[in-house]
Length: 290
Image (cartoon, rainbow, N blue to C red; front, side, top):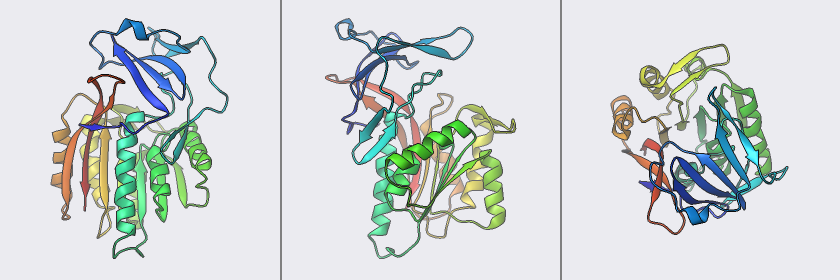
């Protein structure tokens, strides 16, 4: 398992009975998490600033004991991210993704410092959410980053993350569109990318109601994305939160679709729980890299 254990502005203090206790930049919150089926250490759950409550009708709401800062930003090493508490329990980032951000940065910088240092590197981030991986690619000095997500509001959040990292001078294109439609159009245009990243949901709809179901849609998307890979690709990374299949299945999709020489890996990602040997599992990944 890959652990996102380099955070200073984010910690999980405790987990238990379907909830996790998080310290987000000094702001203590309790959020539900379906992976947490063990017991709390009850002495730690005091002085909460906010609690998320699920609704029987879907979604939910935050109960604030203390209000969060208006301009709430936390840092991961050199990167900064805007925190926003949503009605769907999200906070604007998935902290466990720090392990993927770091790997993206390392692989791009490695290529930049090699004999191919003059090569232009282009990255494509699909289902890109608030742009953690987009920020990582821009920070690593990609020549172009394309960020695709179906939600206008989410893309606006991603643009803000680029701004607070002072990366406005980087070439970052923000696209609000159905991912498969965008990929097919890029293929027709003959576009190529050296880095492709995706974080597909289990279920979703595009801006015009296009249906996405991971069990039936992912294989096709990966096969189409492979057509966008450059002749010397750096990285193809899939992150996923579904429990319906193994990380081995993700790796198998990549290894049967990508014909370039390189390394195929897969596994779980997680977050450590402070002062404990317990780890919170947070999803699966598969990646190809050269």
